[in-house]
Image (tube, rainbow, N blue to C red; front, side, top):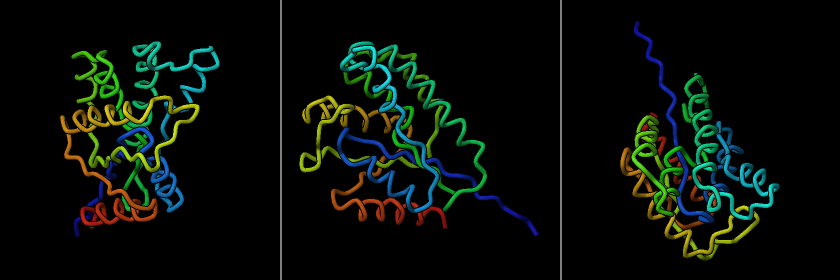
Length: 188
């Protein structure tokens, strides 16, 4: 008898700032999945204590380097996971988002583009800009128009290495069900 181990699938939930992705991630966590939370929120909080209102726009390269280090750690940590619900691990944004944000503000370069190609995710789900649920807060500083612009670059960047699946605009429960249903058809 031959035993086959199912490999863990790495799944990114990304997309427009304020599009509802973190709510989906939170619900996936409640449903028992392993999730890696978005590190940029705590980084923004940390850097704001230095009286920098928007640390990404003020120091994009420095911010991106720190973020890359942490998101790389998350990715590398996920490689050691051997058992998880549905053989799935979720990321609230992935490494590619860093390059996308730099592209959006005209600060990306080939070095960053090369960096992202070293990180392979199995599935990419994106939330589209959604004005009805968009809210600014102490971490989401950009206006809705900027969020739409970032989304364009995020989608373009993930398409460099992956197919992207757009999550429909509906309730958080239905959006999360959509992700689970889509993945179950590939996970057997």
